[in-house]
Every structure is written in C-alpha cells, then in structure tokens.
Length: 265
Image 1 (cartoon, rainbow, N blue to C red):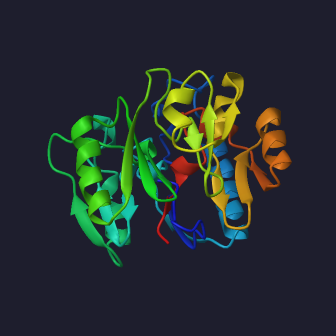
Image 2: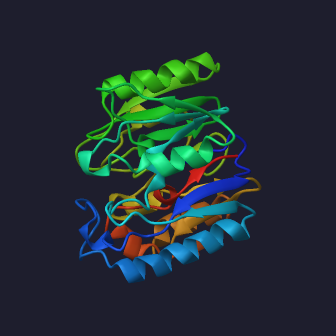
Image 3: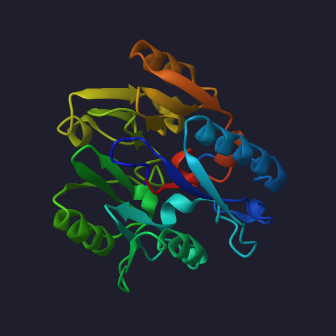
C-alpha cells in the first residue's frame, strides 16, 4: 500500500530481485521475458530514489523460490500500528508474506487474514481520510471486508472499487500524489468511480496507463516512472517536483513503483 498517512514515508521495506525473476507472473505490461540482472539494476536505482527522498530503506534478501518476491506491497497492509497479513491472491505467491511480516512485526501488531479471504496490498490506497480497496482477480470480497473491519475500527472510511479484468490491481491504475488528488488511468477506471471521491483528478491517457502509479511525498515531491511525457507534463503543470526512475525492467513482470515497497512510517 502506497501510504504513510502524511506522505513523510520515513521507512520502507523492499526485497531484492529473485534469481528466477524471469519466471515472474506477467500478463498486462510485459513485452519480453523479465531479466533478473537488469531488474536488479532498476531496483537499485529505485532504492536510491527512495533514500534521496529521506526514506530509510530496509532491504530483505530475495526468495529464489518466489519469482515475484520483490513486489512486497502485496504482502502487507499497514493500518495505524497494525500489519494486516493477507492470504495472497495468487497461490504461487503464498509464503512471501513471512519475512515481511516478521520485520514489520518488530514494531507493530500482526493480524493474520482468515482462510478463504484473499487480498493483495496492491489493491489498497490510503487516500487522506479513507482507504480505497480494489475488488480484483487477486482481492476477493471477503478479503476486502476483513481489511475494512480493521480500517473502520481505526475511524477511517472505506470505499470499494471494482477493478476490471483489463488490469491487475487498483494501484496499477491509480495513485494519490498529494492530499486530495488522484491520478487515474482512462480505459480502466471511470469518472463515476473516481470523481465522487475528489474533484481533483488527473486522467492519464490509456496509452500511459503505467504512469498512473506514482509515489507522492510531502512538499509536492513525486517519484514517477520515466518515459511518459503526458503524465510528466501534467504533474509539472500542477507544480510537482519530479524524480524519474527507469522502470522498464520491472514493468516486464507487471510491477510498478509502489509494488516494490511497503511504507512503514
């Protein structure tokens, strides 16, 4: 989940690229077989960008038996001192949560999702006073409702959003670069889903869908994926200060910027 509440993002957990990254799940963005060595280079640049923005990054070792293990966003959802540990939405990824939960559990309460409920953290966005939760091929209603119970217990609101089969997760096609603002990808999400949440929406054209995933920091600083001119200019026009990271090698396994981290503070 891309979301320390105040966007300070003081701490993050990431995981190195699996040696078997070439076997990672890929359906939406990939145009070639993922390359583990090249992807690790992109990952190193990503970590450098987080650190340049003041985030203290903990790097966990890779899990060779889990080609998708670098996408730690899916393995935990932070809610005000609690770590919701989900049942992963794809069976091949079950087990990736353990080390992430053990690390986060040093300073937060661990809450395990019950059997039958599934959720990927990539379907969760913290948006100011509420959580947006995508119902997707990875997150079922039981998983979303379990998360919602804990969210509401901490006095936050919850909005469920149906995610079409044209995309993987909610964060794949949506992010919040600053308070009150959403980026949303045309052709995947609709105005009727997004515009009731806020009047401040930047619609990313379908051909730049990948660029809808950003990491916003305080002070209108934003990390974006390199190579998407419309989205870059739209954010510059809004007064953001941008840092671009070449995510092409990560994109081959359907991973985006937020996929690679769990922000813990």
